[in-house]
Image (cartoon, rainbow, N blue to C red; front, side, top):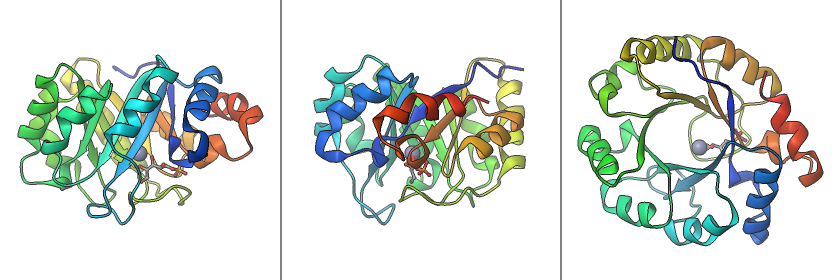
Length: 219
Ligand code: DX5
Ligand code: ZN
């Protein structure tokens, strides 16, 4: 069993964009382990968020791990700019193009960690042959594109991903993203997840509640 300590990655998608630096400092102070950054292109997903210049501008506000979730297609032309902006982990969707192996190699060639994400309808089989290249597996429990959606209970998929990671026999984060709250977090942890993304749940009641909200996700 390679399940690690539970870590929480608040998604700044649900933060107040008019004061992004302040929000990043607030979740850092509140105990966030990773800062989850949702990059959307209005093409791979039906929404637009921010690009590498925004990541660069918030980088000085936290020393925590910048966990960049790319919901873009194609991925490869953007990798270098997100590395230069200060990303620590770059996660690409297996559905974003025909060459996930090449994409993961390209991410790793820059010396950052590589993650692979799967939409709810995508079987785990699709990442079987790239497991040696990944540092993080992201199981989406909503269809990507928006915060605040309801959790799709893909608990069997999380358990199966746990088995795949254990079979790999090295440290790989098992991340769940979408509809995570205090109840669903526990289900994900019990199924084998060790890294939980939460947007609306963390940010819902304002900065004075961020620490309590993050704590309540740890199980
Ligand atoms: C969805 C994003 C998520 C999102 C999660 O496309 O990848 O990271 O911000 O938001 P909640 O926690 O509100 O479902
Ligand atoms: Zn995300």
